[in-house]
Length: 348
Image 1 (cartoon, rainbow, N blue to C red):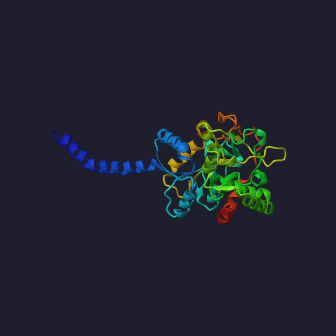
Image 2 (cartoon, rainbow, N blue to C red):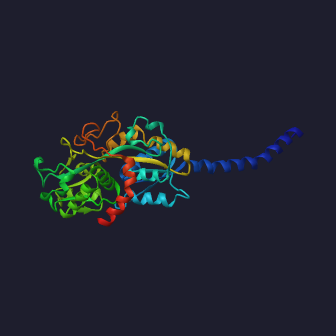
Image 3 (cartoon, rainbow, N blue to C red):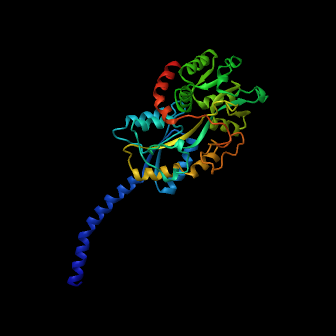
């Protein structure tokens, strides 16, 4: 071996440890940057396939933490609040909107304006970019068609909850969590304090069955224990797909009626989120038209907010623009949520 060749070999040997240290340092960092923890309030059977798909497409390891039916949303929201000084979660995918808005108002969600959300309705996009709504469910009445075979006898309004002819024969989830809390908080602002107080008193006097969640409300009707109840379109559609004799009523469609409440899913990036770049890439996918199409085609039959995206195949779940929608302000409801939650928790 020549002196020159030996010198080159010696120099290369000296460089090996440095190269190894550089590779070792870079590898774990890259691995960490590809991991995102997502808190998910949408039912796992609908959300997990979507997130698993996007994890593969993006090359991101998506860790998912789901909540239970009984503690829907509340447990995840509480976790985000408790972890504010050292966030674990990067992305919050909520199955409703008001709690997401409330987190943003508390400074727990950071701005990110996703280019993929540009064609979503402005009413369901935060002007500051802290949250985005997509793929909605409607607050509907599920009817047992064996107990109520004549459509002329079906309930048609939220006010049927307090109609004496349905005393003890209808139900709704306790308005402490999830879409029912959002619905009742919005009704409070829409009706005003006096009329809403009368509505709550009417629920108690009419012996409305108060249930643990929308799924429980659906099952009471599905199993013939109640003629009808308030629930969401996804719960209704799951029962119908399984062959149960149920029908769906979009309430308050009459002239002058308040309309049916539409509650989107929502997503936001937690303030101080780990792996911000990966979180942003994931949010781009979650708010995309592709997600709305996937959720519309799934058994949950979510209603796309984009007119360009095909809605559920079930003709009993119309697309946006084909029914009278209830007007509500997510920002105002977000501010109202804590007060209503505390009051409803004590009352119910």
